[in-house]
Image (tube, rainbow over the protein chains, first blue to last red):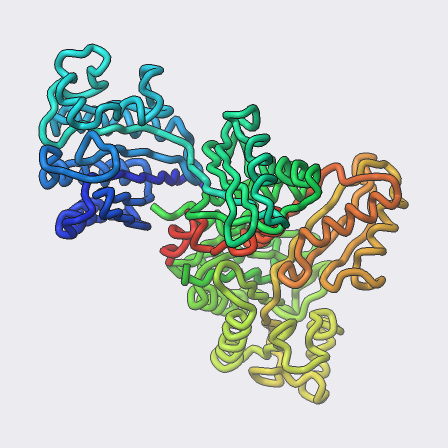
Length: 300
Length: 300
């Protein structure tokens, strides 16, 4: 139960040249214990998102290799795409999974940022939980003006001095690196077709309008069913079961109920085990009591 | 997500000679991909229970090695202990975990039974889900009269002809092998010190008095708190959440509630994930959506 598992989801400014994606892929999987789970390319955005998991050292090595490869093959001076970007490798989040903490991910992000700055001469900004300056917590703030805007200001605006690497922008641009919590994309269907109820519930439960701290939510209509569509940005502090039970209570107030829920993409096992523990009131469940965890322990 | 994980929990008629237990242990772990989780020895019973997990072929090989070693080192003619037994290796259950089914365990048990009968000349009885005769489903029925009683009848009573191996009992005795579902030892504490309420609830929910099919339950008092103490013998057909919600409903009828619950020993991950799915109404959750499952897939 001691092996730490980390997820890394780097975003690259390329989706149209498959040979480039192939080389980035190979640079990631050449690290033996890294497991590549997914590649998602959007041609309009001209942007690809890779998802891989592994031990702290293996994900750091894979990320470094990928950033190096992308810097050699992607030229931001000629890059075009609908998605905002400042670098060939645009953003590299590290997410804690089994036995890992956000601190582990901060350590990886800082170590990687230093290497990318020193060895690849790419300016690096630390964001999210790794941010050293409050104005760098949000990706959008760092990426303001995109590659072109940053190029004009990086060597004369003190606010844009990178955390690591030179204050000079080459054609690989800059890279944003940091630790963040797993994002859970979670939707709850109501037993009604009334989108107004979904919108009211979304407003009651989301942080921006007075609800739970780590919930983003909106009400939508999907195949005639009212749905509360959410991003849960910190499942340890705002757990999934608390969100569901709050929706259940609000739905009852409008005379409806939850008919089902769905998960878009993936979820850390702990988010589900925490839910089982809460509902079953299994206060003292230990991770070692889950049989399969004795297999996990050996994955390295 | 294709690697099948099997648990094996063989019981040996020895707890007093540590050198014998050490040799049994080594015979189990000499199979590379078998992982030994626990050894529990009871000196009064003169009996030890080993728990190990692995792929179908590795647990079968480990079990065969252990049966062979126990047959060489344990003599039932001189064995004494409080626990009923018919063999040096007394009983060998196989339990399906991740991606495995009860059919997989039946196949392993039959293959192992044949080898033990043919190569070690030990009579084998198949029990539980592997039983070929209705009278051999329950361990207690097969073990009736113990080693001494079986020795006197195995070669003259047609009802005691083994499923595999000779109708002759050597000093290693006979071995019972079979597939069974994971057993979950689960206790629910009530917000009351009234043991009568726990007893009434136990009677309402257990199979023997009209309750749920795969529940054994009794009411007990633990540190002044009323507790419904249970064995759940098939968590797929009688899931843990249905048991808990039935107890919750019965407790309310007596004016009390569930204060907490506890798990004694281990649980398959699926029993917890199934509970999270049920409470969160996550109807279509796929195993591949659980990030850690992509690591599981490689355990062999």
